[in-house]
Image (cartoon, rainbow, N blue to C red; front, side):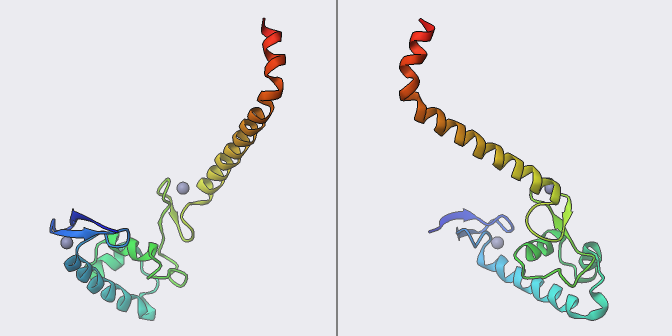
Length: 139
Ligand SMILES: [Zn+2]
Ligand SMILES: [Zn+2]
């Protein structure tokens, strides 16, 4: 399922889907950029490059390179100086979607939610039984 939208890059009208967020022409441009970056990083001597070095050498914008990394089209396992921002706080990370701090933060929040949920269910389950007692207590 898609909807007609303006391409965020060139403003052309195109059918936007979950996977396709830019128009066909821009996808082709991205593919070209990908080839360039990919070829650049295939060379052993370029594997130590930082993001800004790759941008300088290939002319491909950082945002696009990061997109390739996020899509895992560029694997950074063997590229020690590459990282991408945590989706929550922007800290540089090399695996997953979130940095360590955000991970434990999010986990704490989840645990909290689970706890709240459990409490709520418990309260709702016991509501019927305690309703009478609760009422008399307050009257
Ligand atoms: Zn476009
Ligand atoms: Zn983070």
